[in-house]
Image (tube, rainbow, N blue to C red):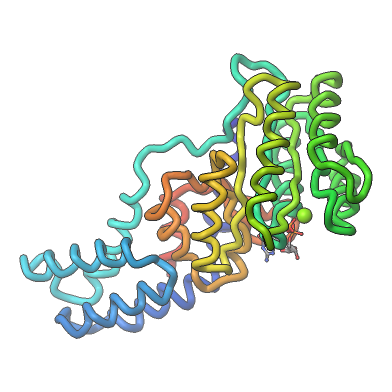
Length: 309
Ligand SMILES: Nc1nc2c(ncn2[C@@H]2O[C@H](COP(=O)(O)OP(=O)(O)O)[C@@H](O)[C@H]2O)c(=O)[nH]1
Ligand SMILES: [Mg+2]
């Protein structure tokens, strides 16, 4: 599913804090200075601070040093252009659209995972709104049966957005709800089923086993489903987000990342670290708390927005 195109103005607004801190900081550090080893060291520290990640930072700095020695970069200003160009080139052509059910069959099933508070339920509301705007019918499955209020939160969004929710009992078996939701999605012929899940993490293994069970149950109802497993990562959580990306992708078969709360952090550089650490594509970014605050992740737009003046 294509969804909509990234809107530079909205991404820009969402990245206000990152831009001020990261690029604003870089700019004031680099402008009007001659490039030398001291400045390169300062740049390195700044990139690490901005959650760009150790690996990406090392690569960028090596590149700067080389071009500095070759005389291609001589001033601080040159480095800004260099960084922008190099960062954009980090994302080759890669399919960032939502996976869908093969051959136009219905429904497409999207399983949404992530730790508590990552922004799963909010991100589901956003996806729901975007899909509906494309003319797709959507059904929601409330499989976060553990946390009091979690089902209700999903229901409130559903009421506002005019879609239905399949739910079970508080504390009940999430896989049973997934089963009912998949059956209902098939019977009703909806285009997309989005399944919310629990994110309890104090004991990692049972959560992963539960997700596995949900996946199996859905696959039994709809062969090959879920077609998309989205991991919601909180952009403000830095290295924790990186660890979650590794754990969930190992155990839960994640096919895409929804990076939430980019508006809430000055460290949008995390997108770069994620790219460096995993091959899972970031498909969407969350730039606020309302259902409109979703943007497809587009590297070109993202880096432009990050470096905009
Ligand atoms: N600023 C901001 N807040 C967000 C975003 N996404 C989610 N939130 C907030 O993060 C909190 C947790 O979200 P929720 O959807 O309940 O997380 P869940 O536990 O993973 O389902 C809520 O207060 C949301 O409003 C975002 O993109 N930007
Ligand atoms: Mg939730």
